[in-house]
Image (cartoon, rainbow, N blue to C red; front, side):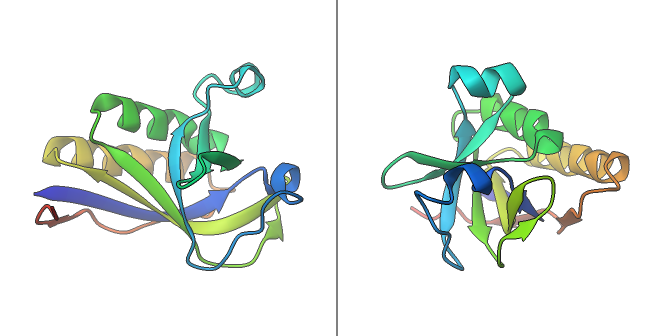
Length: 142
């Protein structure tokens, strides 16, 4: 069984990558730690969004969510977070792209904790539009 937590937010930093990459509605990116020196200088928990096939960095998880996503990914090697683009780019503290994030884990406890912490971030960051769906379970697809 796997547990999925779905929430809507944005990908930040598109103003940096817009000449190299254009998002397509429904496109899915993989989230993982951004190991670049310049990313670590700005946010030690920086999580980049990468094109899966080429591993090309094309944006970042908002800093308000980066620690939560970083610790979720680090908690277990099978945990993963992907984001699917759901709308047009817009200006908001830089150029951002709206998307639906999906965090997946095999641990019910970890999934519940992630949901709980996500709600705390939503309450603390009233300036951000974060929509959270309830955690759901589904059979592992092999």
